[in-house]
Image (cartoon, rainbow, N blue to C red; front, top):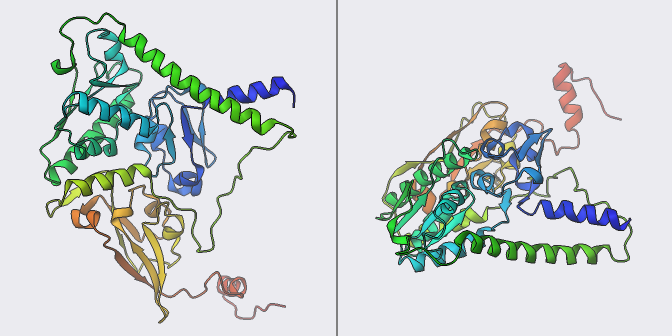
Length: 395
């Protein structure tokens, strides 16, 4: 491969540094009938599209707002500029600098207030759509007494979808905090609070300092990627870097499963807040499952395609089969209900706090399968049933 081609490939990689997509966690890639389009619908710049059972990102359109990652229920999209850990580190610094009252503001309003605020007390984000429940509740578990989100002119902003996502995150986080007995409030306002303003204008340029900081971080990432890219190309022929288009079922009869890091962070934060009141709550984060076993075909595809393992198969020594559902591990992606071809499975957004805080499981015993696909004569049996004739044999 020519050096010019190497440079073009390197630039392509550098352009897509803003986010990482894990195809195995995308419910639409796993099953086109899942129909999830949350990332594409929330993306304010048109960077993400879902087409032909694939999630496609256009790096040149990405503004690094992180809204797509905030609304993705399975953690299939991870922002990189900044990463979740980097953003949390900035928020913790602001938490200490404000003595428990951090401020997170969109870059637009901070640029307008350049030199009038203390950069140590406020966290700058491209858009408030970057904020999700795990970040907010985690800050409260670390001692935040008040969290203020600041943005203005969102209705006219081209990134208005991000503001909508942030609003939903605030509603859900406040509901959780109230249920878990916290007095902390998360407020969304249009003006920077006085506690972060400087008594006199700064002699340095805040926005320039922010820009140089980001540039430094971007240069480090670009440099490490350049080295990695160069090392992979030394003494090697041109290689096919395309991904295997198929996501395959494992030996347990299910697709790959993984629990989102953000959800782990949220559950840990809730556990640190203590015991919640005994209540039933409804938000976008969890769902409870109900299965009409009379309508169910016992295919158990709900467990096969569940991205987190919240629904899993069981069978007993007595020959009973079925599935179980763990609400705590559910991310309310909706895959199970959308792919159920008999309409036997229904989701409810109402979940008890006991189910969220414990490992409680709902159990659904299903009818035995007449013709299990693993049986050596499953094809012959299916054909007999289809043509309603037992005189079909195998040679």
